[in-house]
Structures are given as structure tokens and as C-alpha cells.
Image 1 (cartoon, rainbow, N blue to C red):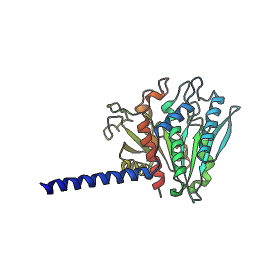
Image 2: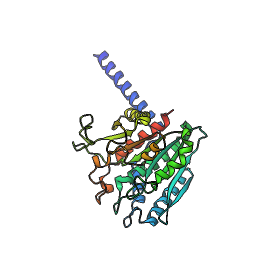
Image 3: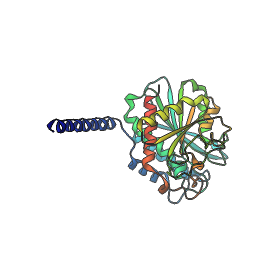
Image 4: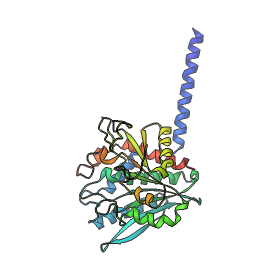
Length: 314
């Protein structure tokens, strides 16, 4: 009887010590915080104005706030200005330089479609880049690459798929340096999740992927395959949210529906991290795309996956 009690106590002690060790390992790495995500969202989304191409003043307010926030993290930023139809638009380009030979790029567009809040599309992506930057600034000594954080304007119509897209302007500027770019991570709508079987797909893909909408997607072309693989491996390591990979050419519907398109066109490897947009979120490009529809806890896991991928990537 005494031996049984002793064994039970010993096993329980080991379990307790193991739990403490796992907790310590987790706390040794900085992680995303949902409170920060909420603060960023409230700053990006105005109660009276919209971040669309007709409201340049509002776009400038948001881009100036982004620059100021990044500088608080100790990351310097510049505006990449360009003219479209007599209006001046700007990307926000920030670099965390560790003196490495190659760069990684993490980006998201900050403009919206029409007169919508654009909480998921794409304040969620902007928030993801901001929180990734905050964490990596603290993890700077562990970085193997310089990291450039880019916040794009004019991703939405009427400029989508034109050379006026902010990401097209940035990718064109990067094309001559593409041998120094290890990869690009585009965060496009990362906040909408649903455990119900509501997920839709491009034709023919539903037989290979989950019916539920409770996963994050990593979408790449064949040249960018390893980036999607690295990201889903990091998500598996975190073990908090399922990650599904799609490797496909641009002619598959939805595969190139964001800023990564312009890096692919420039021959630069890029992956889109996404909740799959309109294939899941029916608030897409409507007035119902509100902060209340976002799952901040799952956004946190998505961001932690981006951070871990960047820290692990060789």
C-alpha cells in the first residue's frame, strides 16, 4: 500500500515538474497578446471615416499611426510615396536590421473596400504585422535575417491587379534585390473562424480539406512551397490551431487574391496567411465586417505561428 502511494506521489510530482518546465519554456519566448490586438484594432478603425482610396486623409492618419507605433517598438520606418490620379498615396516600410545577408518581408494592406470597417479585411492583417514586429523587436538577437515590415495602400478595387497597388510599387522596387529576399509573408484576413461546416473552396478542392472553418490557411505557388511548409510546421509545433496548406498556380480562383501576387510576378517567393476570406467569411466587403466578428485568441495563435516561423527559418 505504501509503495503504491509513493509511486502515485512520485508520478504526480513528475507531472507537476513537467508542467512547470513546459510553462517556463513557453514563457521564455515572447508571445502575442490579445489586449494589444484590441488596442491596435481600435486605433486603425475609425468610427466616422473609411480607409478607402477616396479618403486620402484617413489613409494618411492610419499610416502615420502605424509609423508611430512601429517606432515605439524601436523599428524605424519610412513612407514610400507615389502618385495616382493626382493623389499622393503611401506604403509604410519599416526595417528591423540585424546585419544579416538576407531579408524576410512581412506585409499587410491597410486600406478597405468601399465604406466598410474592414475589421477582417484587413485590419486583422495589419494588427498581425504590428504584433509580429513588437515581438521580433524583443527577440532581435535570435533573428537570422533582417525583417522588413510593409503596410500597403491601394490593395482594394479599383486598383487591385494594377501597377498602382501598394504592393506592386514595393515589389517592383525590390525586384533588383530579389536574391537577398528569403521570402515574403502576406497576412490577408486572419481573424474569422467558425467551427461549423461552413467552409467553401475553389472548384474541386472541398474533397481534400476540412468542411469546418476553424483553421488558418497558408497559400503559396510552387516556387514558394517551402514558406507554407515552414509556417504550418510552426503552427503544428504551437499546437493551438490547425493549419492547412494549399500549393497551386495562380489560375486557381482565390489563390492570388492579395498582395503576394505582386511578389510572385517579380519572381520573389511569397506565401499568403489567411482565414480564406470570402470562402468562409460572408462579411467580406460588407458593412458587417466588424471587430465583434473577430476571434482575437485565434488571431494570437496565427501571429505566434508567424513569429516562430521567422525565428526558425534558415
